[in-house]
Image 1 (cartoon, rainbow, N blue to C red):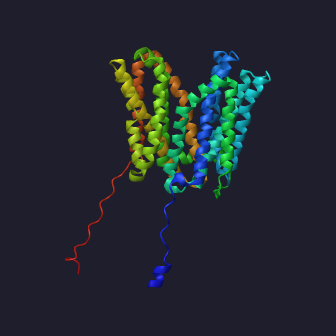
Image 2: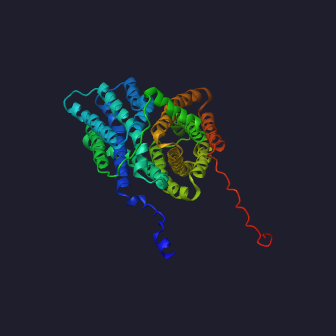
Image 3: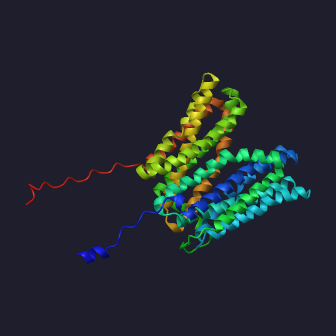
Length: 432
């Protein structure tokens, strides 16, 4: 007996916390630096076009569209490419290096007197395309670096990166533009891409991805589409994400006008209110990682979609003195920032959980394509509806529309179920 106890296998040890895992720290730091650099360029590149190249409104529209066009054109194909790879990290490093070179050409062309709006548009397209490929490879790569039990916490960490960048990026961009001029400030983005590539290169975790045989690009893409649309849980996530983004962008289209013209919010305060969303996102990432361990991703996801319309509804009903408006907007904006991160974190973790490894890149790319692609439609619909109905009715319509996302989750397998009661122990007096 003693010998059998001595030889019995011990239970597997819990993985160390993510903050103690070297490769996750490298991956998280790489993303945070890269995203912060991108936030700098969101201000520096348009300022370069406006102040140095006297860009027209049409030019600015084309420049703005260039950042989002790659997601519509290449998202589905990038997912198929990612699922064909045995190792995702080399593609991620290559994408960061290509983006670094593209961003570095902006100050170089300016110093040589060659810079024009067309150059900036091409740079935006190149960086956007590399970013789409990077995200497609990064999603399945996370599964190689992080144990399955820590996927939700890792997703929360990545969304915290976006919150950090959204809070610190614009301030850093303003400082760099002031000190270096707008074209030279784009160097910060180039350096951030280079630093990210070096950090990714230092990751040691081996990748053991076993890709499914490719049947051609079109068939690979349609396989990912079919998986996202036929799997009940994945379909519910996709529908909820599209619904939320459509009405959220319709709200964003009228947000500034409503704040200034209807609520009378000082223009200088609007930026501070937006920054609070980033602060809320940091809090949301921290809270989500802990609550998910106790309640599970499905419950957190349902709670997020229930409370999603809260800020928009509060904005539509808001009246009273300025101090009250600012206080309520600050509180609801911070909470909404946390809710957005909670939803996105649980959505990513559930996609990883419910999707077979050979389809993760394509399913994630399909979700990205649909959720990002609907943004332009939502913004257009919000602006047109406001011209016809007025600002306040559109605010209420957006709140009601986002609330519809709850139905997608509630009527799917993602709806949290009560556990059946444990069977009662047999009465020893009746057993014979």
